[in-house]
Each structure stands twice: as structure tokens, then as C-alpha cells.
Image (cartoon, rainbow, N blue to C red; front, side, top):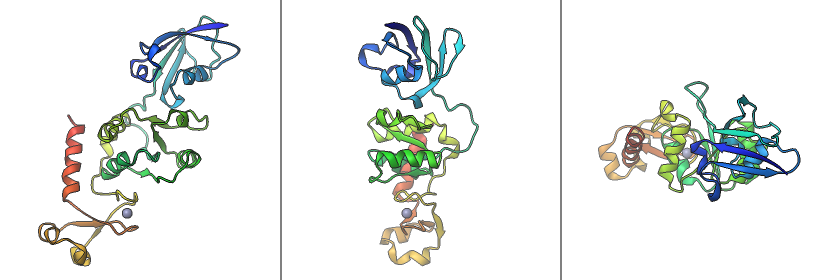
Length: 235
Ligand SMILES: [Zn+2]
């Protein structure tokens, strides 16, 4: 039996089993084992791992852990403001998070009918970040980009995702269909006036329409909600 000491960043500790949640423990194991395997066995998907160090050296997740190693594991950090805007695919339990993200313009694929294989395929084929609360799904070896959503509450989930990926710089409210993810197009009031409720007709002049599902958007109740969400992010 070999024993290695593992130490985890503060932000990863909440993901460890209760008896390990001070973030530091001795790991007993047999045979050749990679750091990735041992970290995932402790409950942390590889998508949450940043750097892995053994002693002073940066070794990566594929490192074969040796007896008496001290292994330091840091949390994944998407880094400073580089790279393109991330796009997402969400598992079927995150419908309200999907709506919040689309409401502020972020590209989110979501169908309640997606099974695990489809979620993984979409994440890989379109280089999307998989958002889920299912650790097993994020431990799939082919998956490159994913985030384990911590909170059960949709607004907190939304704040988690916006902060992790610094999404505030790409915010585009009133641009994307909440129902089907298409980008909205401006539409003349006269064209859709028959579909408007009397008060909407009276108080609003600027409208957008989804070219796919034909849903109409205006700066009414949704817009006030968006403004509250943006204000909450900037607190
Ligand atoms: Zn639509």
C-alpha cells in the first residue's frame, strides 16, 4: 500500500466528502494511479482541476503518484480576459439557469430530451462548456470543458457561472430567445400589432422577434428582471 498526502485549494474543499473537507488528507492506494484518478475518486471532476503539483514541480493530472508524495491541487481558473466568449450546453435539470443565461444573451444549448451522450457530444463537437450538477458526467474522460454547478438555486447558479467565466463583459440583454436560443431580430410594431396585449400596445414601441419560434420580446417585465440581475452581479 502506498500513501500520498493530498492538499486542495479552498474553493475545492466544498466538493470533498465531509471527512476530508478541511482540504488535506492522506490517500492510501495500490498499484500505479494517476493524480486525476485519485482526485476524481475523492469526488472532484477533472474539469474542476487547475494545476497539480508534486513537491515543488508542476506535474499535471496524468502524473503517476508515488508513495509519500505531497500533491497540491488547485482549482480550475479560466484565466484573465483572453479567448472567445464561452458557449454552453446545460443538462436537463438546469432549465431556469438556461433561461437566465439566455436572457442576458449567452449562447446555451438545452433540451430536456438530451441524454448524457448527447450532452458530451455537443460539448466536444461545438467546444461548449457543459454545465451540470452531475459529477459523474463531468468525470467522462473525453470531456474538456465543464463546470460543476454548486447551488440548487437558479439565481445563485447564474451568478456562479457569470463569475467563473467573467461573462459580464459579453452581456447582451434582450438579444436572444429564451425559449430556443436564436438571436432576436428587430421587428416593426405594425407588423406584430395584432399579437400584442392592449397595454403592451399602448406603452411599448420597440420590439424584437425570434426568427425561429416567432416569440415577441419587448422591454417589459423581462427587461426589469434583467436589470435586477445585472445590478445583482455588480454588487
Ligand atoms: Zn425562439
